[in-house]
Length: 306
Image 1 (cartoon, helix red, strand yellow):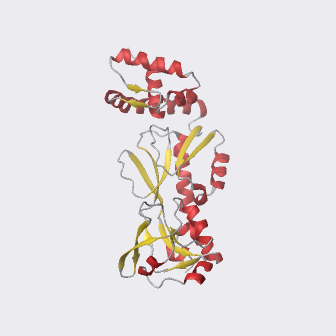
Image 2 (cartoon, one colour):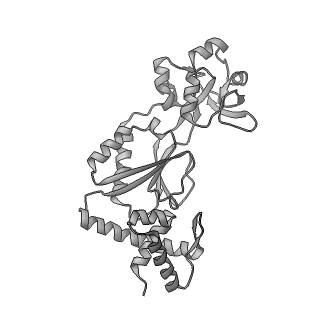
């Protein structure tokens, strides 16, 4: 007969992708967890994990076993939390992955509001522009831009995502304002780093999509730094409307070619397609969806004050 404690340890290790992280969460030594997994492998007569000093990877058998066992273990955990804390009380740690400049868009005051409402919850944010692996990194939910193609994830759109062109008054006074999208090729443009030192911008306008190859002396890979460079007069930037709108309204930046925009595919809240989400995670998801619904997201032209 299988030892359910060993199964539960295996699920936790597989979920976090690390004996050290699983040990931290369970409050037990990593070597104890490793011994439990080894005993489980002996009982099953098959290897569940490939171990190395750098990473841990599930075997095909381990993946199949995890997919069958994880929902049951999570159900038991949820039942335990319900009995210990009360069925309407969220508790535990919520781990969230988001882009590096996430809190330039997201109101950090919302986190304080959520934690005040749920005092038994703790939150961990992992900010990185690289896309996180929810299973191997033990992530409960992630904020992602663009289309979500992974069918193992639940994706809920929380915001439409649009980009518009902007430049500082000083830059436009020195170099003039482009009269057309094609004229952008003759301007300094703030782009993401490319080996070719060029970037292709495909903008939607009154007569359809228009493409132009742009370049510039300064390139950088984060939206917040592009915004700072734009304010400093280093060139014309293509930036999220919600990020650039306050500067345009304040007169720090000018909306360039306002009839053109780049429509994105939205910002999504994604999480694993589990039957039983921890109450703290589901509470945070619903809290965010409500706060976003309360905001008035406007079109790029309106957001940029035109």
